[in-house]
Length: 106
Image (tube, rainbow, N blue to C red):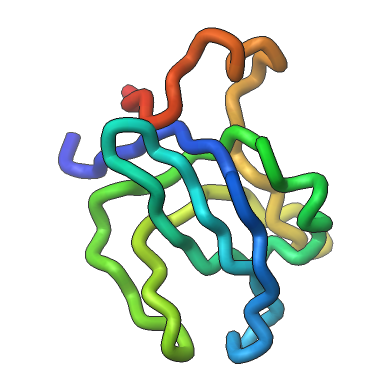
């Protein structure tokens, strides 16, 4: 109950060459919470695959400074057997049509 998990939509993906591990900088729309940035080790996804994608994020962790970049939210995923992170996202492809950005996940 103390972890605030929200639905967000990726708006922008930028390279993050200063990160210790290969990562992207993500700008995510969290609705009423505004747009937030995240550093995510999800380079197994191409930027054009990520833009517009609905993702599940922890919105109330303290921001972290990662190689001079302020990561404000944690994007959730699960590592597969090869170590690639698979993003958590709503199951229904129609979710983006009726679920608002920033919707709270219970």
